[in-house]
Image 1 (cartoon, helix red, strand yellow):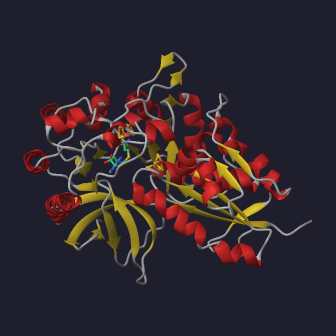
Image 2 (spheres, helix red, strand yellow; image 1 turned 30 degrees about the horizontal axis):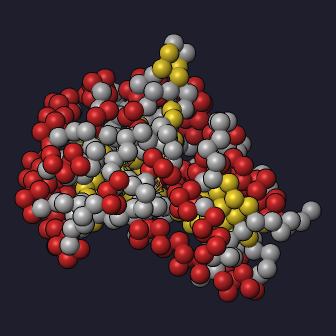
Length: 440
Ligand code: SAH
Ligand code: SF4
Ligand code: F3S
């Protein structure tokens, strides 16, 4: 028998890419590959790419350039590009970087094993189809290997919202929900393998409407089904769109014990003029009222957001409206970006904001968001929170984990194992983490 081949995967972009990379590694496991953390010893390198902003997409080409020497030393090395850049740029990738052997779009990952076999015969292969068959069914988990305490699980993919700045509807395709029974089977399997917390993933996860035994399920109904899975302790989901925040989901935040008090709910901007031009179909006011209703159901919920500054035709006044909205909401965490022109999206054709001005706005917004984030983190001191331990810390006896609110927490002299949940009192707040002590 030949020695096992080594696979090196580098993942960019969102959590769905992280999930997809795991599935691809499993699919190629069937071809005799085991994963390695070093590109130098790989027989196959896969870049799982992101196209969301120009910088993310361009990174792929500089990264590929770095493999030139490696490929010269090791002619059998195969190099593949997966993910959203693969979908968006397809053939262009091979033209720009001839050392690439394989290009595979996010909807074709189940075909990777055949594609890999073809590259071994010296072919160059490309697949950016949107096939009919259910890729998830064909990308089933490998038998029962042990896993860490947290996992992602994709329940919905793609997006029909077409925000004017965004490539996702083009790279991931139309919105599709997976049937509930398959998700539940996957969840039970994860729990058997040691998982205690599952984060349900979808580009528009709260638009979930997968088939159940008696018709389609909402995301809240799916969460209640998962709530029954014994051994599963925590449920999270991301990313939600304000317009799909249904009543039953808001209610679940108040009543479902396993559903964690954390919600990522991107607003993008605070000016109604800009929101309209972004094709977001919500206003600043409707978003604020929504946050009010969510907080009425779960007062301590931590709200997280995404923002874009410097969207075409954003004035200083529009930007002020974003700052005002942030002041009102008080975000526990947030991701903010300078608008990046994406070819093929509607906003790409519009008059652009001066980049120096946009940089300045981004800095001002980030200063405010960082301050809020710190204030909310500091306000945890003295409180009791649940912590799921994930791994030992750098100091002897120390354990690291995440609080219910997704803050990183470390506990000294901690006699708990990874995968255990405990009640912890927070004793101090550092730059990016909280220190706590076990209760009882
Ligand atoms: N599905 C999610 C997130 C999509 S991408 C949602 O609907 O919000 C993640 C974030 O990247 C977005 O929320 C947005 O803030 C940012 N983003 C998307 N396209 C962008 C662009 N062209 N320039 C800058 N930021 C962008
Ligand atoms: Fe992109 Fe908008 Fe869809 Fe989110 S809702 S993935 S920002 S198009
Ligand atoms: Fe990036 Fe594609 Fe995710 S563009 S953010 S990897 S859906």
